[in-house]
Amino acid sequence: MSAAVQDGRMPLTDHLRDLRRRLVRCLLAIGLVFAGLFPFAQQLYHLVSEPLRRYLPEGASMIATSVTSPFLAPFKLTMMCALFMAMPVLLHQAWGFIAPGMYRQERRIALPLLLSSIVLFYAGMAFAFFLVFPMMFGFFASVTPDGVAMMTDISLYLDFIMALFLAFGLAFEIPVATFIIVWAGLTDVATLRRSRPYVVVGCFVVGMILTPPDVFSQTLLAVPMWLLFEVGLVACGSLRRFDLAR
View 1 (spheres, rainbow, N blue to C red):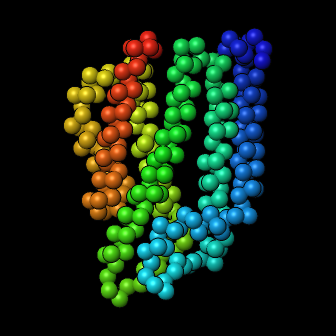
View 2 (view 1 turned 180 degrees about the vertical axis):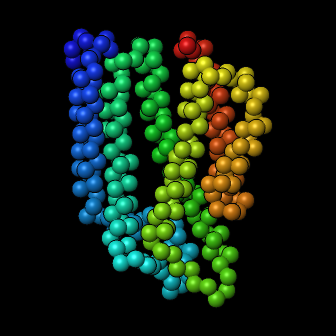
View 3 (view 1 turned 135 degrees about the vertical axis):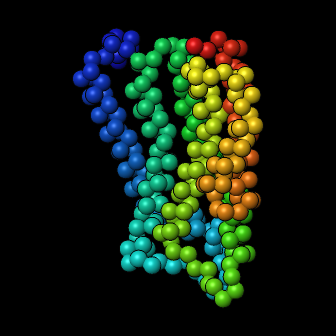
């Protein structure tokens, strides 16, 4: 790496070339992972659909209402899995692009934040898959009216769970978001602590919007969001301790 790159004085054209090179690497990483996963696309969908299938009535199954759904639904799922599995490469490329323009003090924070954000996003998805989905689909199965066959379309199911994966993944980013707004000087920890009642109400409102219309599912999202907000406040205490505040 040249001295100009190291001290952040890379010309604009070099920035653009570096960005293009890193984008190509990201696409190649996603493509390679996708190529390795695609032969197992059906098995992946079978795994992801298991939280619903376990609650289907005896003799019932998921259905495909579109001619292309048996192919496109596993294809879309495999693409999303490839994106998530290639995330370490994507983060490495993103860090390599922005790091030369950052001060040393900022680098001490930025890299841990990047790593924490992806770990928390994965944690949110795991929380949804292993805890929320079984309870939620069990509830849906229990309230199915008599005489109604519970047979879910595979494409609609995939869209539904992907939306929930995204919702829970983003919700688990609250500690990082809290840390960033305090670090950037947009507010302070004392103000956030005084706003705790409003944050709790906001968590339940978000849970009501993003989850199915039952109190249990809403609480499963709202309570972790509130607890993660408290974790963010604790993390903000390290700013002064390590002299990282702006």
